[in-house]
Amino acid sequence: MSTVADYVSRIEGTCGAESDLIVNFKYEKKDEAIANILKKATLKNNLAGIIFELTYENRSFRLYTSGKAIFRGFLSKPELMDFLAKLLL
Image 1 (cartoon, rainbow, N blue to C red):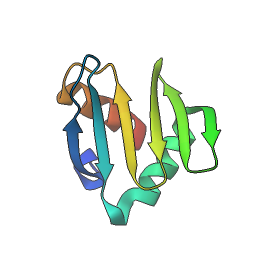
Image 2: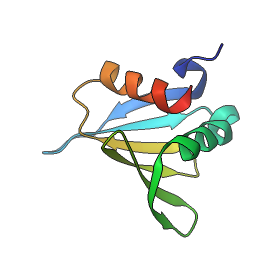
Image 3: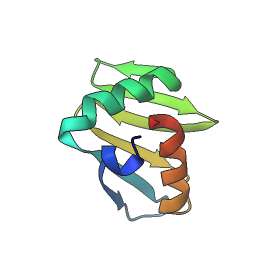
């Protein structure tokens, strides 16, 4: 059985008034992660097939084909990990 750790390389926070959490997916799993997310989330906007603006459970986020995703409005990494588990698994 897969876990979130099988897909996620690292999670970094940003500075500023509105802090975001940036998730980098493991290179060897990024295509699978992107496919799983696109199956479950609702597409709001597609920018040149490179950047996807998505929503899932009333949360909006951006997914990049490079294997990076930016999530807003999460108070902690454990909260984000729970959200990622629903998206990826």
